[in-house]
Length: 470
Image 1: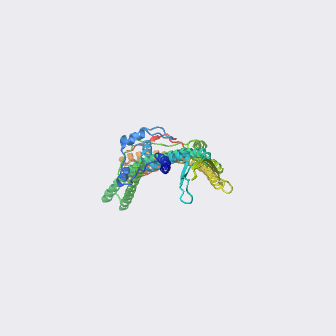
Image 2: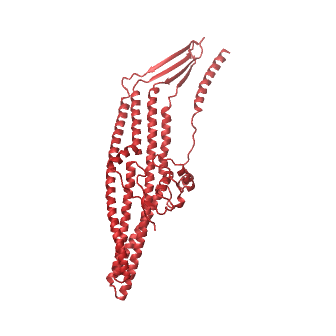
Image 3: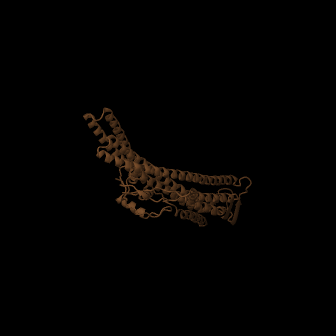
């Protein structure tokens, strides 16, 4: 009976250890598959449900832009395209997945090490075993040195999580700006295409009249050849403009996260901005306070500071506390307490401290370099924008004069006072100047949106000078 009791006691103790292990496993996560199947991929690659997109845009809260009304059914505006891109663009979804990683790192930083439990059994198996019993040992230990580094790990993880949020918002800003930019590009490409269609029609009419004149002997074959060459040049430019329009449409679809087959109409009479930038020094000051990437870098630097503090604290000796209980084979029971301390004779965590300090210096220098680059970009963009506006002002004056001259020539042709060829050449120059104006407007829009990003001021420029999309 005594022998049976002894084995029952061991079974009970073993059951206690197993029970503690099972209790620890109860909170473990379960595996959930995420299969990479053709069905799941096709579902993500197909065109989004626009009703769902409208709901998501209505609920969208961005740190850099106020809420915007969204309804693509009456045509897409640049601001609406920006908000849609933030919701649908697949690249941003990849960036947002980093939030989950940052949250996991924050959880991991706060987790303390598990206590260690041990159990051993010794059974007399030889020699004078009379009067002996089964011995056992039970131990419980825990590394308390992790308490010293836990605050630093938490500070670093929190700062890193906030920095990632800002980095994602910065990417959303860039995608939104790209969507606005491609929307304006598509509007201008459409306007350019229609102007070249008119120019081609004008050249075709001129060639027809030159052909009629050559047959009647009023015009020479040289005049007809010149008109034919001009028509061929216009046709080539028209084909190029059609190709450019299609490429711009595909570029907009790409940033919006739409398949190439989807065609979303643009809103009518969209205003083209002609930005007049503030002084460069004011924009640079605003950039330091508002640019999300600079804020993210500052938080990243704070995180690294916490990493340095953690590494310095981790140089202190590791301390392990332990409690033990047991019984030897002579049935003598013991209870004990133990402590173990590393002697920092060789490894004082100096390698990790040096690495973290070097990383901190790198982040410091990176922030300084980002500030330098930001200031240089703002200086360059403000100067280029001022020059482009002056160039546009001169071009619009020339355009007004050519418009007046064209009207005068049109009246002279109707009265038979001007050669038809001269009139068509004047009309063609008018189209050319309009095309140059559109090209320069696009350059100003590009510079303005780039300056918005560089200064960290979304929606800095007002929209003016509506162009008719006739």
